[in-house]
Image (cartoon, rainbow, N blue to C red):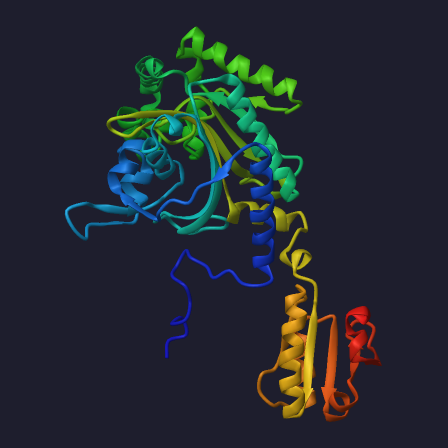
Length: 413
């Protein structure tokens, strides 16, 4: 039998204890933070018509062209969601006027066919928010503050926030033409992908990680220099609002988020715990094209896998959020086994974590299982304890044990 037969697919992972306890903490605190800002949870399907993503993300983006899991079971081509915004906007568009002024958040798996690496998988998980409504610098600033609040709640304090702007839609032709003219003299110094991007999607040249491309980008004007005064003023208002809220940010004119739907404010958050590749999360204001309706809004997403890398680098692990040890019941004999089944039900009804062997086993085997379970206390019962309505309570941490009346059990534990 092949050794990898029971392994998950490449770029996908099973999440189990104790790591799962860290995930639970993150999900619970995310829900608490988002609720405090007035957001409601939304769950959308994993599968959507591929046009939902093509219209929203842009048909020339790498996500749409190279990274989506898609198939055509009938007349409609379908795709597994590569990100959360497009499906959320599809849902909100169907809610009429209510959807044009909504605040929702999601916690969900996403799928992209790309080369797996640390913190980046083919199935990955994101938490994100979307707040629909006409462009408003204060809404953008609040979204940035919200994302910082989320990271702080997880324990990722000390993050760095870079902010920029994609400008208004009317700026796009002037920005694109200005960048093309600036890049042409250096075209041969760019990587092969960026030489193609000059004509297809010139903004992607700006955020290319290739060292030679970055050297070229450092020599040309930033996209902001080709934008209207209104776009630059909008960014200034966002920065002032953040200052009012006490959120420190740095303006980075060459920050470009890769998706076509972004307008006005965009931002990225990094954390030193991640080392040289310190990007952690980001977001921005967008205008989503759904064919018959455009939806304006602002939102962000954080990848769980990436955030967990940062948390673990900071010494925050799943073990710290494991459930309390609880109780393990040891049964010496069939009568004790049945009585312990009844006792387990009573303990669980009171919210106490409780485990036991459901088949006759030696005391040694049961104690070994109790130790592996992490139980704080073990309750031992045999025929004598059942007859006398007593029990033996063993403290696993202290290594001590005592006899006690059954009636005093809940006082003792």
